[in-house]
Figure 1: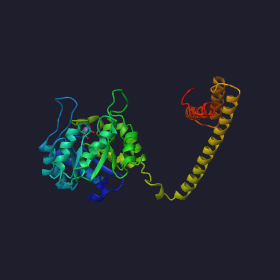
Figure 2: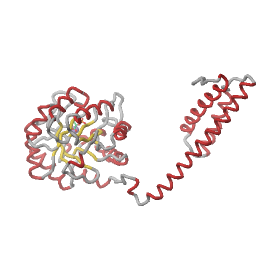
Figure 3: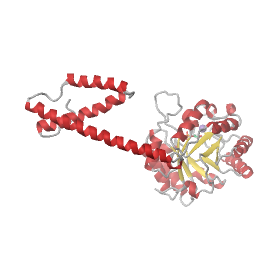
Figure 4: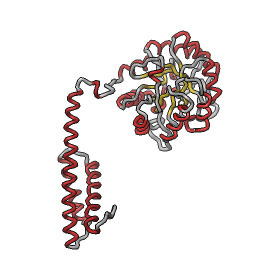
Length: 364
Ligand code: PEP
Ligand code: MN
């Protein structure tokens, strides 16, 4: 897949790419007040939900088409491009009718291939940018599958948003970050812009800054943050929303690191350090290879003298010595023991092949 969100989009992005706005569009004044303040910061894209997927019925489920009119009015005044969540072909049709610039697909919608497919089909021929949240369950293939369904309908201006995952066990997060999943997505699709939504991961204001910082430290391309003129009175997600002022302070507090090592003036010294690391890695492997050749010699000795391959006392002796050395050399005992577990397995494999002329796996 080839993506071109930031190159095709007229919104040329600084770094990080910023999407912000209220969880829900609640009334014309609230939308306009948020957009005016955010325009000053500035941000790249104004978000507001008009169809809200709520966990329980009888909560505020969004202003619908009326909300699109408020968003359009805010855009007409401030010039800020807008994005709304769409969860059906009808939502797509209405969002396009009111000139919404970017569509986003929410985490709950992303779990349903049928729904994503019907949205994808309704996008055919539009060329509108689409931002795809991760599905609520931690399933990277489902996330990628959703992206593919949209891409296959001719939408190449795509981005992904990491908003955390639902898990049964309690954690300090509203949705567990499980950072390895978005990072694996980035590894597989390095050109797909990846944003982080710390609002829905954290669920609380005080977690926004550390989560946003972590996302930038992990080289995410941007952030989506819920900002409301009076968060305590918000009709949805009140606890995680912040005022434009707090948002602006948060942005100032973020440390923006260099994205590519090559950009750094210290790059040449980094290069030198990398050369040393490569050399040391080579030494490690040479030492390992030498150690294994001695394991083989011991294997020959054991065979000739009819001694069992695995000697528990000797193994305990090695473990205790290694623990002592790890502490002395300021290495984590846990990691060093794991490494030695592999070394011992390989050693047994080598000795088994000496003894039986073939490999015997995991026989200790
Ligand atoms: C939202 O961004 O307001 C939203 C509903 O998010 P999610 O789909 O991540 O729950
Ligand atoms: Mn929300």
